[in-house]
Image 1 (cartoon, rainbow, N blue to C red):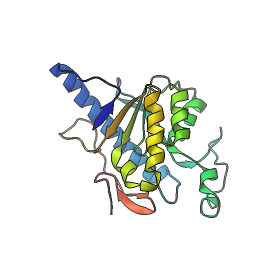
Image 2 (tube, rainbow, N blue to C red):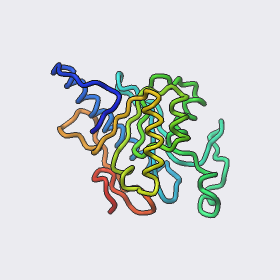
Image 3 (cartoon, one colour):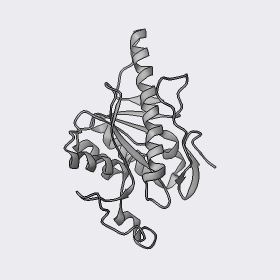
Length: 204
């Protein structure tokens, strides 16, 4: 795991707190994948995102790349258009989906942490900055594996970094030791049109 925009600590108690935070963030990454497996409507690449408070260790909202919903939770576009239409015009990215949900529910996003396994395009990065997010947690493997979008993702992450947002970039979403956070069994998801095992970080 690489962590930018933060200073290291030599106090053992601080390392314990850091280890616990890392375990919570890894749990959140697994949770985002679990949510994406059933909520994402992208026919090629499923992605999830969530907002959390690491201090209270609470997940507040979850989102996925799917059709936009209005105030009555009714998608604007028929699902059939995802196959025949322009996907980019029909789907909202997972990061913006969870931020839009927060706006609809009156939840302040200022100072919260956004977790998204595959983050983020420049448009999502600007939305994250504008919403006052403090930390962004992501997973390195999908970013490096999907070469078509690697440059775009790194550009988005550089926008976050340049605006002072702390980035937590994990090389694995599995904890290095037994943890108190509830474990979940993850199904495969679609990634670039192929079954992808999130726990192993590889295509099946």
